[in-house]
Amino acid sequence: MNEELLLLIGDKIRAKRTQKNITLEQLANRAGVSKGLISQIENNRTVPSLPVLLNIIHSLEEDLRTFFEDMQDSINKSHVLIIRKGQEKMFSKEPVKGFSYKRILTRSIVSQATDVVLLELKKKAGRKQMIRTDAFECKYVLQGDIEYQVNDEVFTLHEGDTLFFDGRAPHRLKNIGDTEALMLVVYLF
View 1 (cartoon, rainbow, N blue to C red):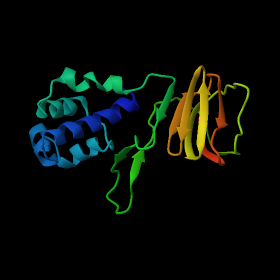
View 2: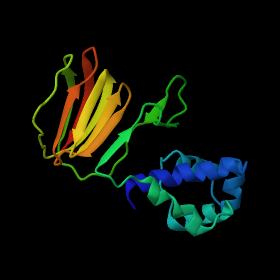
View 3: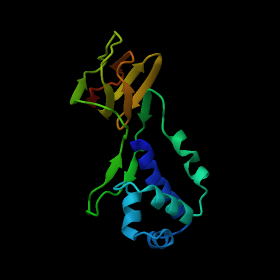
View 4: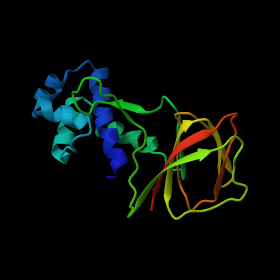
């Protein structure tokens, strides 16, 4: 199972539990596990064993096939993925007041090196030539408006949007805004 699917399992268990107005304690009792374990699974802090997962699904009175049916469709198989501002998933990682976590992107990628860069683009700056890199690229727009072309597709990105793609695909970008643009770029080689 890849990491994306594992994260969806925790989210799906929480969604089904809350949809059916079942408390953590009730689900734990039905599944024969601790309340803490259910919480850890829902918050993606642990991966349940297969028997525990099956007990939880059964305790939610869900059919195994329908529980997993739409999950694979939720994983974008495209070479390009865009997460628009506001589409991040809020999650609770630790009970510390004032901490707010937003999951922007989770992808299973085999990489050996990582390069994290801030890219500033002056007003109307852009690349004319399509380029390729030997890395997966994750671009988070901190400020401004960016037009990004990957292969023949053109995407308009605004502050808070995230673009993820395989850099081996030809690509180029330009600042289409009236101000300087700023992006956080992560290269996964």
